[in-house]
Amino acid sequence: MDKRHQSHRRQLLKQALGGTLIMVLGPKELAFGAQLVAVRVWPAADYTRVTLESDVPLNATFFSVANPTRLVIDIEGLALSAQLRDIVSKVRSDDPFIAGVRVGQNRPNVARLVLDLKQAIKPQVFGLPPVAAYQHRLVFDLYPTQTPDPRMALQAQPGAPSASAAPQTNTPSASSSSGNSGQAASASALPASGGSPGAFISAPATPAAPGVARPALPNPQSDQAADAMNDALGDFIGNLKRPLGASDKAVAKAPPGRPGDKPLDKSSDKNPDRTADKASVDSDNALLGNAKAGAQRLVIVALDAGHGGEDPGAVGPSGLYEKDVVLKVAHKLRALINAQPGMRAMLTRESDYFVPLHERVVKARRVRADLFVSIHADAFMNPQARGASVFALSETGASSAAARWMARKENSSDQVGGVNIKNKDATVMRTLLDMSTTAQIKDSLKLGHAVLGHLGKIGKLHRGKVEQAGFAVLKAPDIPSILVETGFISNPEEEAKLQDDDYQRELADALLQGIQRYFAKNPPLARNRAL
Image (cartoon, helix red, strand yellow):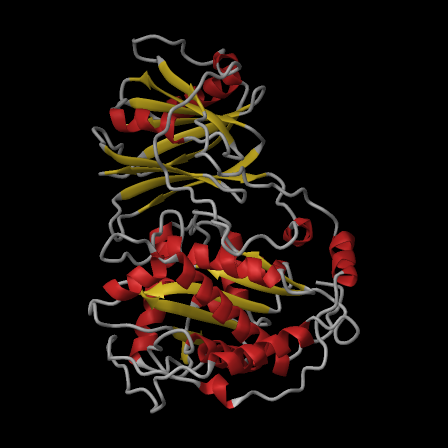
């Protein structure tokens, strides 16, 4: 078929369905006989991702259709199969964007997906080459046409939730479905049901697991309203001149693990007296809650749960995913921070979905965060490696071979999670975020030291000092930023601890105390109301 004939066919299709033909993806050679390996759906308030994994690259054409709103996807070289049919059961009722999905054989060697939508979307579609455990992936990201204001989402947060509240996870799985009237209404311009080519398998979205709440979608609000929030919610810093005590320098030894590690500084393995430490922390809390002094504005801490969605992060010996552990710790820490007067925490991801590294930083800057804390769980080929670590950014190179190795591993998250490299806005933002400052790194080291001291009180430390390397997620030029490795998920003993709810709460409490201790010596400055 020549190019003129193909163009004419697309125009006829566009006129017949009343939609907008958006784009054509894929190599010039069609992938006939492609085999699907898996289909996955990752719903979230930010966006929903649909992933088709196959043994060869897929060529896809997609277009939108209105009244009712839906997205039609034609995949060439693909036959209707059990794997493709499986996508019907992967869509959940609490998905903010997808109401249901239908699949069918539109014509020989062309499979069709129809996504019935709950709202207008801005789709991004791109292919990913094989990486890690994945083969070729065709990705459909469904973004809202209007992005909610994240600062208003902070204001809309309810009172401090329970620290033991479990986060929502979006692990794709098949589940039962119930009838849904209105599904058939959207099929008027599509092939009728039946067993012949062109027939569709349809089902409504499946219900969410019991006890899982539908993610809230805050409405966009004005910058004036966000500024009013900062003016109204103050009461944070009081008399913050008390110097750090000797107990803040507690460090424990750890056996060598990663390549290039140096011996730890000599110090006692025994934890400081808990009673004395609790008294000092209570004193800090009283100071932080002083409503009559200090900066009269909301202090915001950005919490970044590493990995997510297509990117599981490290995997423990028993199959524990890093992305799940760090999300639970982040939710517990957010609850603790929100319980502090004049403080609020925002999460770069609320549930199990992937967020590109640069977008995590962008989210923190949108809410004008005072601190950025990225939470991870380490892994190494030596199962004996153990202990928590804290990292800050470096402008001049890694502080050790271990830090360099860790930064390279964490920076590969975009490749595994799947980033649309054709997104020009993302490329521009990455360039801006490379303008790291000496002042930011200096403050990050102070924050890292405070957090490391409190982590050393609940367990072993892998390193007795804050390490530095070129972590992409720490490159906000105006926000003190650290990356915390809570332990080695590859160590069977530490994996068991990381999976324990009580230990997760201890980690969250240690991080809070470190943040409070940092603010005790480095009160946040008054902020210009303009972004």
